[in-house]
Image (cartoon, rainbow, N blue to C red; front, side, top):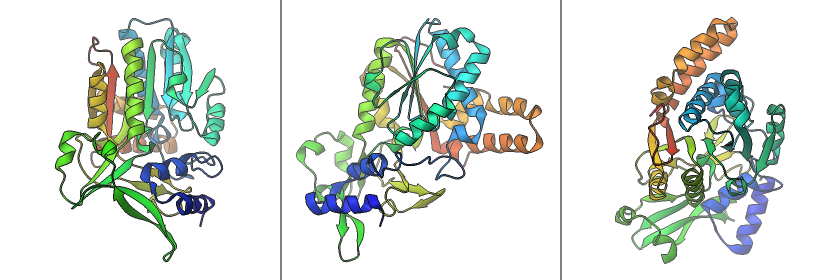
Length: 360
């Protein structure tokens, strides 16, 4: 049993079963033993690999997208550049290198802000971005106002969800308890409060017995904050994550360790616990806030439209044989029709009076 599991066992013993969101929040951010507080989870030696770690072409394409959006916004003299959950800082350093090379004026306008709660990851980001002036935040709401870019790559999937099960007696919330006989964590249920059920969308109330509904209140709050900033300050937000385009039912809670899927209720604190993103719900929140929503479109469509294959071949021309092979394989992985190219979706948010951005 991990240190964090012992801590969770004591919480459950004292307070009773905990929600799925409570589990995810503690597993990720516990001060002493949280997954993102104590390790660098990225890369081949970590638990998973993200798009910026697969190929530099990904970040360069995002940098070009931002440059075009900045130009379309009239080239403001000051740009608040925000990344939510920056990982190692790899995506941002690729974006900035591209921007600096192509448009020094855009580079000069950038004021860099990173939203990151993980102590270990902040240290890694400081090393990666040591040549840039960076301000870190725990929350997006502490970032100063101004024309803003917001980048969120594989950020929303890590935000804590709640799960609800439709039973013969109505909606019950899925909770985590500790089975003292089997000596393991297990799911249980308890009747969901009317206050929580009242927030469900109307179509959710028609669920069949044994349907599982997931709600991500943290994602909703971030979406509201993003929409408010873009509505008031202008420019754009870009969200890239794995998820579904239409809201529905199903259990998407998952855990990954050493690049393999595992039970989210085992080895807690040593595995990355995530859930698929409900893009339909995010889109509804953005539209209700008065901003324009573009997409979601498959990652393959977005990246190929913006020329990732051409950029990859340009990099290959000056690369050594081994590096060239990695670049080609990396590009293929990001746009694979039966893999990341379709699983991952891309959504952009802009002020209501702007044209459709590149890639959509």
